[in-house]
Length: 116
Image (tube, rainbow, N blue to C red; front, top):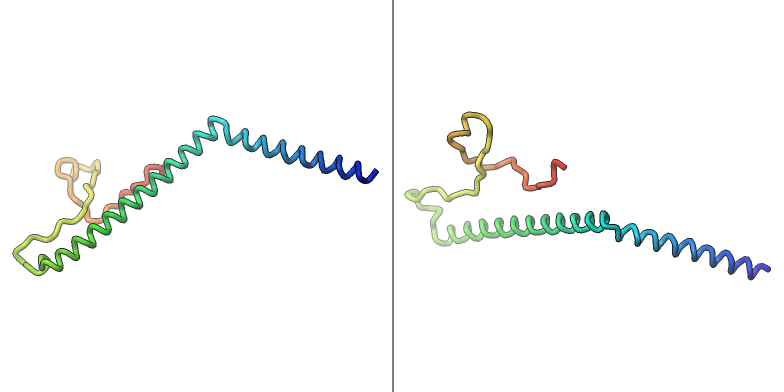
């Protein structure tokens, strides 16, 4: 009697577990879920690419500074100051509409999803 009850309970538990597992997998394979997963992967890849580009830019600036120092370009006063990466200040004010200025440290964010 106890043996039958045990196996009946074990079978019912296995059935509930399997049903739950299959339903979860089916929900993951819906078109909406697949689209959301693809979008998340694309966002992650974009962040990794942005981080890589920023690392490359930092490395380039560091190497350029090393080369300038090695060549003595920083010590000559007759040469113009080295160029800096700057962003154009885009503003609706009349001050910037005709003649945009270059800003040394821009407050612009590269995150295209920050206002979503």
